[in-house]
Length: 191
Image (tube, rainbow, N blue to C red; front, side, top):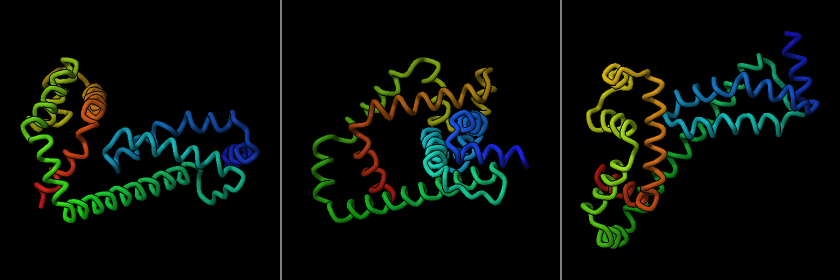
């Protein structure tokens, strides 16, 4: 308990070394925790980074009545819940736009047909590195779990997860110009 009080006192005083030690110790576990809630590695990392930014930014006002670990996990949990609310609000907003602007949907559909969109997606997938492409296809097209892919390819589940993160990041970048259309077509298909 005294060690924790010293760290908190050091943090309040602006001791960067103490902050770096906290970051080094808790960043990866908080990323994992955020990922377990959001199922998005990039968002989980953003959340963990924001938690530490907020901790440093408000260090002088920190009042921790539990353990530092509990405090960090609570901050992470709250940030994840806020992110989920934000995503739901955006989805609701996009759904409303889709309902109220059917002309825009028709214009968008005229600009790029579904076949052209599928072609862009297929090309992006084919441009993935071979191992990454294989793992992505097993996961998304054959609905294999990470554990099944790991067994089938004789690699670790962590390697599968890392390759999927790379694949999704690559596809997100390659298809960024089409993401609004993909999202809009998804909303229409769901209704």
